[in-house]
Amino acid sequence: MLQIIRSFGLIINYKTFIITFLSIVSSGVCFHFGWLARFPDMLVGVAIVFPVVFSIGSAYTRRETALQRFSDFKGHAIAVYYASRDWASNKENDLALQTRQLVREMLITLEAMLKSKSKAEWDGHEKIIYEQFSKISILTMQFRNFGVQSGEISRVSQYISKMIIALDNMRIIHRYRTPVTLRAYSKVFIYTFPIIYGPYFASTFRDFSAQLEYVMPVLYSFILVSLDNIQDHLENPFDDVGEDDIVIDVEETIQFLS
Image 1: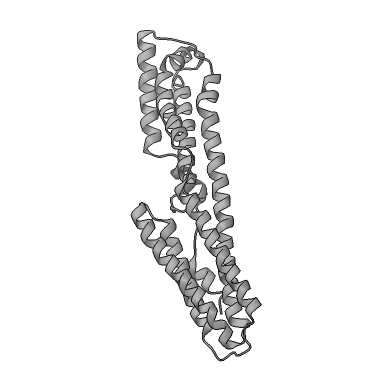
Image 2: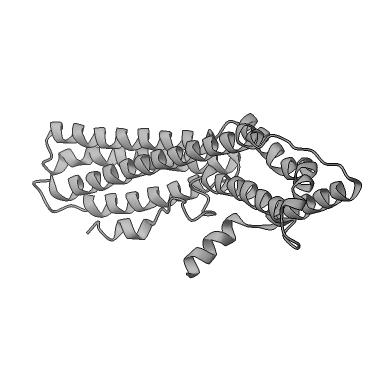
């Protein structure tokens, strides 16, 4: 029950109540002055619901892709660690310890990078993580000194290459979101529609019992603004705002590297 209440708290916020209030005022004023009109209901679906649902679907697909790319990054990082621990014939080395520490640092940097709110902040973290890639690449060259064959070192290099590709995919997902023009279009109509449709809501007042005249503007406002809030939460899967965001738990990963 608490989880459901928390979820509703995320999609119903101050914007919901502001638009609902303005919609009620608009409907009341239109009814008072006799400004009545029967606008087509299909306009809501064509102009608002379809673009918003498309945006939500696009954001969700982007989140699922981000999950796959993060799994690629983490999985290949763990594979590099296992290679440093198990592939050397001479076990008298600290390769596994160094790799474990580097993987931990990279995950911490990745988490900070994906939560960046500005390009300058992102660029700073990106520079650090590529320096860490360089360190782990140099470290793999030491494998040869402890009996790891050239073919196996080449395979570890491929793991690192796939980590870099996964990182770049996450960078693209972080930077390129739902088209800005589509988001602007949806927001304009979502926030103005319940007000503009005041004459339509006013024309339905006599269809409802007393005290229920404002049920339509309230429902329309809650539904449309809630859809917009859902899309906002899904837009950035790394910002820790919505319940569906991707959680990068560094310590949970590191505890399996032993």
